[in-house]
Image (tube, each protein chain N blue to C red):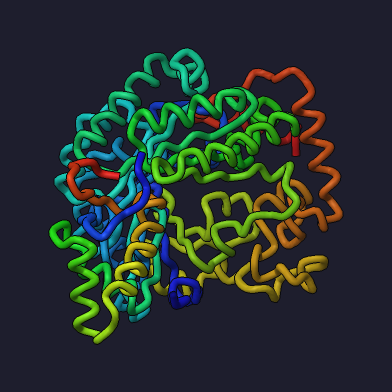
Length: 377
Length: 102
């Protein structure tokens, strides 16, 4: 195999955050605490232009996301445009509300794949996490319809202290629904999840048990379902190459058209994000100050600068470095070589051992969330 | 669930998996859910013959004739390569004497 997809000269993925509107209110949401409003959302023609530019730039996969992407009345048009310009379209959905009704139209528009979130394996717990009664049953009906329409289905479950004991049941549910992939994604603490970290943080023992269980299940279920595991940063030894490295593989377009190197990048003060209203995607990829800020390795400090893994994990996540060390250019404290690594281990141990506080459920009007960030940062 | 294709299996790319000519990078890729596989010449030749009608035996014969190579060697290589795609759930197949899809 050649290495053409790793050259980093052009992005391979575009996360299209079509809207921040969502019927669910999951406290682990990684959307920003200040959600963008409907009035600022890009119109259909602008999204179609952006998608054409993405294809011309070399993007292969488009992730139609949000919020709940089917809340947009033009979701079929946007999906059809992906197909028209040769982009692989992935619908990242809650499966709630209008989503079920729109599914057939989306298939006819050329949708390639569906990623459906579930919050737990049982309805009572799932509905409580999503803060919406009846959500889980709607999701199951949605999943069955995806399979009936012969679309490939991935189940995504974000894991936290409220559901980590049911990982095995979640895997069983994904298999029984006919999913080809399941993502067991330990919470990443951005946006709402950062605000709610203490309510979400599992203990190390729980994490170790759940990871061992996934590894065993992977072997047992080989050829039936592919299990992708996103390991939790606060208990990690090495950081993740966030978004495959800053400005290397991914572009994120926010509902209002700001183009970000990752979906949390706006938490970093001082970065200038260019908008699709003013610039082409190619121009933004090549020259936008936000994409240039942490691209490559020149910005790195020690211990990253001289680390042999610097072009493997690219220093980890800039947003996490900022949130936990106050400096976006420092080593991601998920790394055991970071001088702040013991801080996050202590945080995780203390928060997971304490009784879970009541989470703040995702929603518009973020003042409560902001106060809470002030207390925890 | 059976793993293990045989010469009589008839492979197909399921919905949501497709070949794509990447003109920007001048390469062929296999697009699948959350994945893109960069294809070398051999993998591309095999996948271009995967059409839901030909059996692996027929695919191997076609390649053997074109490259003047030993069919049984090619057949084993094709089975290995396609089995790895079955394991990743990005290839379907009808097995001889069955209508089961892995």
